[in-house]
Length: 137
Image (cartoon, rainbow, N blue to C red; front, side, top):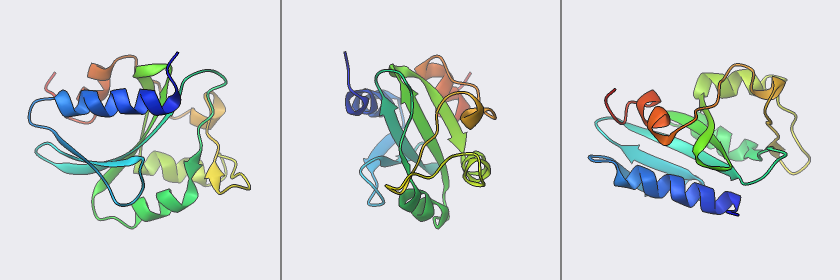
Protein backbone atom coordinates (compact mmCIF):
# COMPACT_ATOMS: atom_id res chain seq x y z
CA UNK A 1 0.00 0.00 0.00
CA UNK A 2 1.19 3.49 -0.84
CA UNK A 3 1.95 6.07 1.84
CA UNK A 4 0.55 9.60 1.87
CA UNK A 5 3.89 10.90 0.58
CA UNK A 6 3.87 8.37 -2.29
CA UNK A 7 0.35 9.44 -3.26
CA UNK A 8 1.47 13.07 -3.38
CA UNK A 9 4.50 12.11 -5.51
CA UNK A 10 2.29 10.18 -7.96
CA UNK A 11 -0.11 13.13 -8.15
CA UNK A 12 2.69 15.62 -8.86
CA UNK A 13 4.22 13.25 -11.43
CA UNK A 14 0.83 13.06 -13.18
CA UNK A 15 0.63 16.87 -13.20
CA UNK A 16 4.07 17.00 -14.82
CA UNK A 17 2.88 14.65 -17.58
CA UNK A 18 0.10 17.01 -18.66
CA UNK A 19 0.96 18.80 -21.92
CA UNK A 20 1.86 22.45 -21.42
CA UNK A 21 1.91 22.26 -17.61
CA UNK A 22 5.08 23.17 -15.72
CA UNK A 23 5.28 22.09 -12.08
CA UNK A 24 7.93 23.32 -9.65
CA UNK A 25 8.23 22.98 -5.90
CA UNK A 26 7.57 26.29 -4.14
CA UNK A 27 9.81 27.76 -1.46
CA UNK A 28 6.70 28.17 0.76
CA UNK A 29 6.69 24.51 1.80
CA UNK A 30 7.79 21.12 0.48
CA UNK A 31 4.06 20.39 -0.05
CA UNK A 32 3.36 23.52 -2.10
CA UNK A 33 3.82 23.39 -5.87
CA UNK A 34 3.65 26.15 -8.45
CA UNK A 35 1.80 25.25 -11.64
CA UNK A 36 2.08 27.17 -14.85
CA UNK A 37 -0.27 26.24 -17.62
CA UNK A 38 -1.53 29.37 -19.27
CA UNK A 39 -2.14 30.71 -15.77
CA UNK A 40 0.05 30.33 -12.71
CA UNK A 41 -1.24 29.18 -9.35
CA UNK A 42 -0.16 27.30 -6.23
CA UNK A 43 -1.28 23.90 -4.95
CA UNK A 44 -0.79 22.81 -1.35
CA UNK A 45 -1.00 19.00 -1.62
CA UNK A 46 -1.45 16.60 1.29
CA UNK A 47 -2.02 12.83 1.08
CA UNK A 48 -3.42 10.08 3.30
CA UNK A 49 -3.11 6.45 2.33
CA UNK A 50 -5.54 4.81 4.71
CA UNK A 51 -8.53 5.71 6.81
CA UNK A 52 -9.35 7.47 8.93
CA UNK A 53 -8.72 10.25 6.43
CA UNK A 54 -7.47 13.16 8.48
CA UNK A 55 -4.95 15.56 7.07
CA UNK A 56 -2.65 18.03 8.78
CA UNK A 57 -3.01 21.39 7.03
CA UNK A 58 -0.33 23.60 8.54
CA UNK A 59 -1.58 27.01 9.69
CA UNK A 60 1.76 28.68 8.89
CA UNK A 61 1.68 27.37 5.30
CA UNK A 62 -1.89 28.64 4.86
CA UNK A 63 -0.78 32.02 6.19
CA UNK A 64 2.03 32.12 3.59
CA UNK A 65 -0.39 31.13 0.83
CA UNK A 66 -2.85 33.84 1.85
CA UNK A 67 -0.06 36.42 1.51
CA UNK A 68 0.48 35.44 -2.14
CA UNK A 69 -0.91 37.47 -5.03
CA UNK A 70 -1.50 34.26 -7.03
CA UNK A 71 -4.49 31.97 -6.85
CA UNK A 72 -3.98 28.93 -4.64
CA UNK A 73 -5.77 25.72 -3.77
CA UNK A 74 -5.46 22.94 -1.20
CA UNK A 75 -5.64 19.35 -2.46
CA UNK A 76 -6.38 16.62 0.09
CA UNK A 77 -5.69 13.25 -1.52
CA UNK A 78 -6.78 9.91 -0.12
CA UNK A 79 -6.04 6.33 -1.21
CA UNK A 80 -4.55 7.36 -4.58
CA UNK A 81 -3.77 10.28 -6.88
CA UNK A 82 -7.24 9.77 -8.37
CA UNK A 83 -9.30 10.65 -5.28
CA UNK A 84 -9.35 13.72 -3.13
CA UNK A 85 -10.79 17.11 -2.32
CA UNK A 86 -10.02 20.34 -4.14
CA UNK A 87 -10.44 23.38 -1.89
CA UNK A 88 -10.29 26.96 -3.13
CA UNK A 89 -8.78 29.73 -1.02
CA UNK A 90 -12.31 30.85 -0.07
CA UNK A 91 -13.20 27.28 0.99
CA UNK A 92 -10.14 27.18 3.25
CA UNK A 93 -10.98 30.58 4.74
CA UNK A 94 -14.50 29.30 5.51
CA UNK A 95 -13.20 26.12 7.15
CA UNK A 96 -10.58 28.00 9.19
CA UNK A 97 -13.28 30.22 10.70
CA UNK A 98 -14.27 27.63 13.29
CA UNK A 99 -15.02 24.49 11.28
CA UNK A 100 -11.58 22.85 11.29
CA UNK A 101 -10.05 22.17 14.69
CA UNK A 102 -6.55 23.55 15.18
CA UNK A 103 -4.25 21.03 16.84
CA UNK A 104 -1.54 21.83 19.33
CA UNK A 105 1.00 21.07 16.60
CA UNK A 106 -0.17 24.06 14.52
CA UNK A 107 -2.07 21.95 11.98
CA UNK A 108 -5.72 22.24 11.09
CA UNK A 109 -7.30 18.78 11.14
CA UNK A 110 -9.80 18.43 8.27
CA UNK A 111 -11.53 15.10 7.71
CA UNK A 112 -14.38 13.90 5.48
CA UNK A 113 -17.91 14.74 6.60
CA UNK A 114 -18.83 18.02 8.26
CA UNK A 115 -15.22 19.27 8.11
CA UNK A 116 -15.42 19.27 4.29
CA UNK A 117 -19.15 19.75 3.73
CA UNK A 118 -18.73 22.53 1.13
CA UNK A 119 -16.75 20.24 -1.17
CA UNK A 120 -17.38 16.98 -2.97
CA UNK A 121 -14.43 14.68 -3.59
CA UNK A 122 -13.08 14.29 -7.09
CA UNK A 123 -12.98 10.68 -8.29
CA UNK A 124 -10.37 10.90 -11.04
CA UNK A 125 -7.22 12.81 -11.83
CA UNK A 126 -8.88 14.02 -15.05
CA UNK A 127 -11.83 15.54 -13.16
CA UNK A 128 -9.34 17.36 -10.90
CA UNK A 129 -7.45 18.61 -13.97
CA UNK A 130 -10.64 19.93 -15.55
CA UNK A 131 -11.70 21.61 -12.28
CA UNK A 132 -8.54 23.74 -12.21
CA UNK A 133 -8.55 24.31 -16.00
CA UNK A 134 -5.44 22.27 -16.77
CA UNK A 135 -7.17 20.33 -19.55
CA UNK A 136 -10.11 21.07 -21.78
CA UNK A 137 -13.39 19.20 -21.30
